[in-house]
Amino acid sequence: MIKTTELCKSFDDIQALKNMTLNIKEGQVFGLVGTNGAGKSTLLRLIAGVFKPESGRVTVDEEDVYDNPEIKSRIFFIADEPYFFPNAGAAEMRNYYSSVYPHFDTARFDRLLNEFGLDPKRAVSKYSKGMKKQLAVICGICAGTEYLLCDETFDGLDPMMRQAVKSLFANDIYERGLTPVIASHNLRELEDICEHVGLLHKGGLLLSEDLESMKLGIRKLQCVFENEEDVQKVLSGLQVITQEKRGKLYTFVVRGEEEEVAARFNGINTVFFEMLPLTLEEIFICETEVAGYDIKKLILG
Image (cartoon, rainbow, N blue to C red):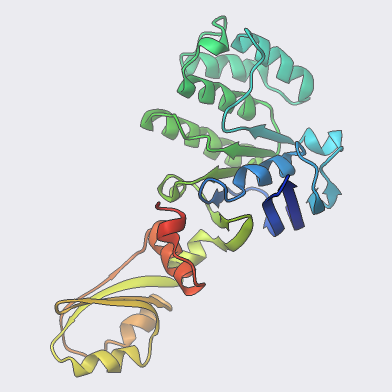
């Protein structure tokens, strides 16, 4: 397990992270969401042991990461702008990483390089942005590490390649218990792959929640009532997070099990009623508004 405890990091007079406490369990896809400057990249570099904590701790299985080669060999970090040796080709990067990571799978690397259509002899500096991201993912997957840290890895990939990369992640999670930690400013990008999501803002953690539990415990209702007095009868027994009225159409976001929520409408006459699942974006908007933040400004721009 990756744990950060009261983690702080500053750059000159800029506080990048402050008192960051976070747990990342093995064998799940953990999403880090936040705007540019939220602290995502700094957090990943601290977990990878690239940066030294100013205060607090970063540990893997209770061992500090920084200045610990054995722990670092269990982690592969893909930066937002992956670094490759000047004038090196993919084959040179394969040879380098195979000397650093003891479980690097060179045969799989060559196979994936061919499947992705990347020329092993061509200088990586001549690759497009998307091709560089593909190569970085292939290096990370083939390193055979337990943890794969990805900083905006899907940015620059076309939709087909995004699905290909997600399939690689899913395969290695199932086959060998890989734990990807994926940082992104795009909630929609993470929704179909992440099991747990943490929201960062200005160097702090607003919330960290299991996505499935969040989806099961919160739902959206859209209703048109025959009688307006029935509205209060329904609301009196519901834990309402947000409500909105447009014309005669009421929209509620409520907490509770589906059967429990539906039972509140027994004996209530409605012209229209439906219960809808929420997207990850909608869930975060509701949860952060309750906490006093406007995620539409934080995440959606």
